[in-house]
Image (tube, rainbow, N blue to C red):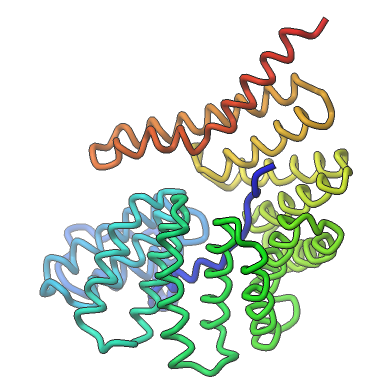
Length: 361
């Protein structure tokens, strides 16, 4: 089974101001000054946990204000670009986020001294967006630049260094370089365990990522306790329908499947799917993988081709929804076909399950 979902610390570093006093949901009509833009960012921060459509609308208004009232190349425009891009990424739209991150990076590189940590933030964010589109080879040099800048400017145990180590490791892993990724994950985990209190969700993220690189090396017995510890932390610290819990369930399920415990894997995969369905918009790419994992489990292990067919059909339908949405916008039409290609495993499973069912006596 190809690598399932993972929680990666994207380090989007949203530059939202404090939401204290912000009237969540209050819409600014015909905004006229920079104070309106700040209030829009404050309101968007209140929606950042899940009401992404509302956050996107507010952030687009704020960006328009900044672009209208500020000179081209102002750092506030870079902030607005970064925050809007982060929201688009959270909605599963990294292709739309990428040009915004590139503009933000361009502004910061022109306005700030070489080595400024704001540039490192933009490098990291652009790299993660590129990686999310299946281009890890393009993300690697960006992550290495960000890591070098942070190591030059920060103490060796600073959490921002841990973030860069984690993200570089994830990029290496995406290229099949798990052995090379493992020490970066271990160093990142050590940094976060020193910097954060026991039970912090970011520790769970690093445990998950280290466990996944072990699983992908076939070291299932080593990965399982790390995944179980990560899941326990997330279930104790996050709302029950949080997508990070779903990711953790999914990855533990894949680890159990690798050890031949198909029934346990199925129950865990189904819990993950239920959370993703409740928390993500239709067409989100994470749903593709969630459906695909159950379909492939039944196709390979249980022999229940009907179940495989049902979940593969859901995954294929989800991919088509996303492609149709992209095809509806001129700037993203070229990506629509690419999304179908990226989701081809659901279509392959769908075809295989249909073929198997047709030959059942």
